[in-house]
Amino acid sequence: MAHLSPARVLYVMAVPHEYGPQLRARITPLMTGVGPVEAGIVVAHHLADLARSAALPRLIVSLGSAGSARLKQTEVYQASTVSYRDMDASALGFERGMTPFLDLPREVALGPFLPGVPKARLATGASVVSGPAYAGIDADMVDMETFAVLRAAQRFGVPLLALRGISDGVADLNGLADWTQYLHLIDEKLAAVVDRLEAPGAADGLETLL
Image: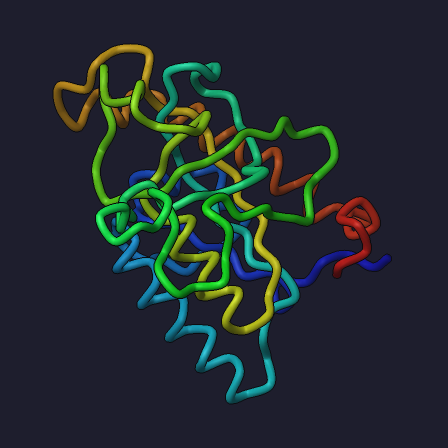
């Protein structure tokens, strides 16, 4: 299959802190801002504009950092599933993590996947997770945007590939520098994955969804 053109792939990131020189040399992502509300609004609005022009992408790639108390720091993982860890309507009889009256499971399976990149379960929420808080999260890694990006992508029928580099989680966070200290390494590793994704024939490894 032919090389993936920029028009076929929409790259999405949250903030410039994660958009280092290696990624800057390769892609120009849609920047959403931090958190599920900002991500959902920005991505849905952008996709609506593209839909009006009959120019929807064939794939959305969500890139950035994630926290994890169990995965290897600075390594890149692709999300196999994503859940919305903030949603709790259990007082009304719904399973925690389930959005009431929405026909989706608590944990949504993603795909397609890029061969050779390890998979991990991702949970999205509006809080920064640190220290003992990881014990209450049923996932391998946490971020603040992917579930919202997924919901926008689903509305327009576009598949999502979520790539996350582990920036923190081994030690407690005590300030912004504890999050940013390894972002330069994650930038290099995410850029290497982007090169693989953009390589001729890469689409054949994405389950022919492109």
